[in-house]
Length: 149
Image (cartoon, rainbow, N blue to C red; front, top):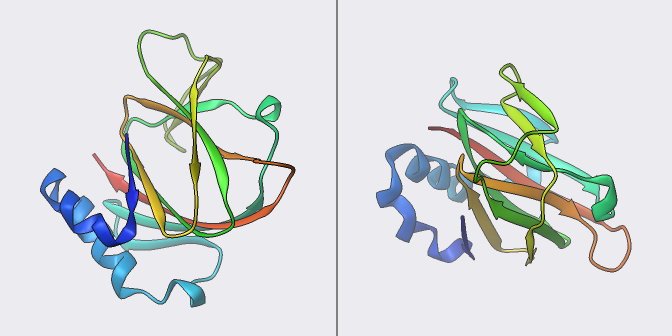
């Protein structure tokens, strides 16, 4: 997992060409005008999902993992807590859904705050629980870039 400010995103281009192109898309796009929902950037390689939602209580959420895609989650408006822990032999509470590329887990996790202008990168070995409220439910607008492994 990586947590940083968007102005430092060029430091992560060496991770992979698709990650570099996903950040290029973020910087080249007027995200204030991007409608909520799924936007194909490069066929199945890079997908942008603009999400708008209310944050939830941790009791309502599960850790998730992906196999086909790396998540770049970039906060635009609002703030949320995100739980994270390493995938290390835990048994899923919901088996892998190949169509939607996710499986769910219950486990202990550490938490960090994602504020506007910051992004987090989650790799397949990172169990993550986004969308958690800080001090009560609040609206957020966040871009999720799905980058094929």
